[in-house]
Length: 295
Image (cartoon, rainbow, N blue to C red; front, side):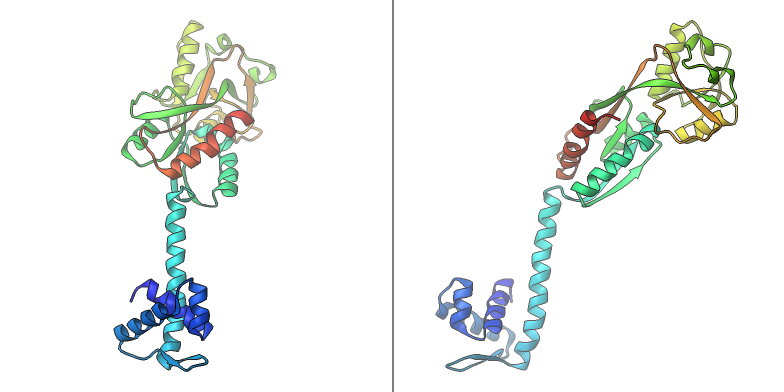
C-alpha cells in the first residue's frame, strides 16, 4: 500500500463516485477502478460498496479514509519540511560572537532572522575570543562567527562588516573622566584591564601604546567584555574597548573617546567551503544589511 493508492482511495471515498474521482485525479475511470481493486486485494478486505449510482464505504473503508487522510497530510508536511530545510529557511544555526558585538549587533541579527527566517533557530554563543571562534568554525562547532580580525586560519573565510574605534573605559570618578577626549600618552602610569593576549583588541591596544612609547601595565585580564567592565567599575584599572553606545554599564563607568584611536574591524566569518543553504541564506540576509545600515 503506497501513497498513490491512498490518494486514489481518498478521492473515491470523498466523491462517493468513480467518475467524479477520476476527473479530480485527471485520469480515466477504468484504471482508477483497477487501482482500488488492487488496494482491496492487498488489504484482503472490501473497502467500497459499489452501485450504479454511487459508492458507499464499508466499516473498513471508513477507518482507512480517516487514517489515509492523516498519512497523506503527514507525507505532504514531511516533503514541505525537507524542501524548506534544503532551501536554507529552517534548521539550527550556531553563531559565535565577540563580546562587544553581542550587545551591539546581535539584537539586529535576531530581529532580521526572526522576520525573514522564522523557521531557523539561532543558537548564540556570546563573549568569545577570535581564536576560540576560529577553532570552533574549523572543527564544526560553530556555523558562523562575528569576530575581530586578523583571522589566522586559512580554513576560515570572512567579510568585513563594520569598523570601530577604541574608546577608554574609566571609573566614573577618575580624573580623566572629566575630559572630553583622552590621549593615549595620558594612560602611561595607569593600570590596564585587558582581554587575553590572543585577543585582537589587546594586540591593537599594545601596538597603540608601543607607538606612544610605553607598555601597558596589566592589572587584570578578563575574557568577557562584561567582566572587563566590572573590573573597571570596581576601580581595578582602565580598559580600551571598541564602541561605547551599546555596551552595558552603570553610572560607575565613564566612556571617553581616544584621540587618534586605532581602528578595530568587525567581521562575519564561516568555514571555507561550507555550502550549507542555511549558512548562505544567513550570510546573505545579515552581512550586507549590517554593513550598509551602520550602528
